[in-house]
Length: 107
Image (cartoon, rainbow, N blue to C red; front, top):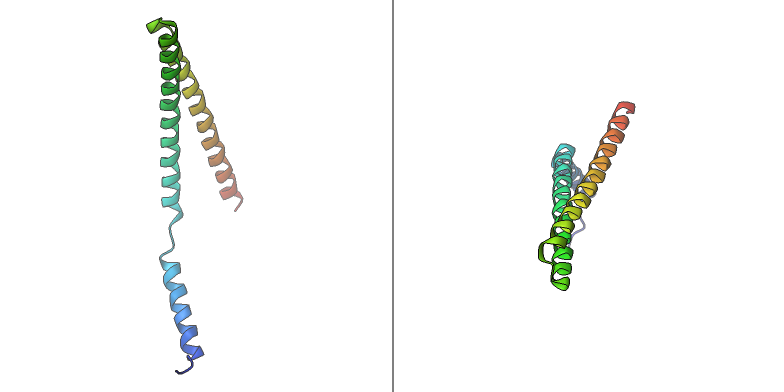
């Protein structure tokens, strides 16, 4: 078995590094996926709030035998909680964008 030629190994490493640099992911696509994830997160937060409110309301109505009262009340509260959580997420996204814009402005 022969020893590898150091010059050929160095050349191969350089070629691999150039190919990896050329195929590196673009930050713009990463931004798009981040925003899509945030949008889905907001939708899930809203739906989860309504679903939890529905579950609690239905359970209390079943327990007390008062069918629509608690169901309507807790669906409304779940909707309000979901919207409030969505607004917090929107503030988080806005702060992230403002910090990124300030960073871009400095750099």
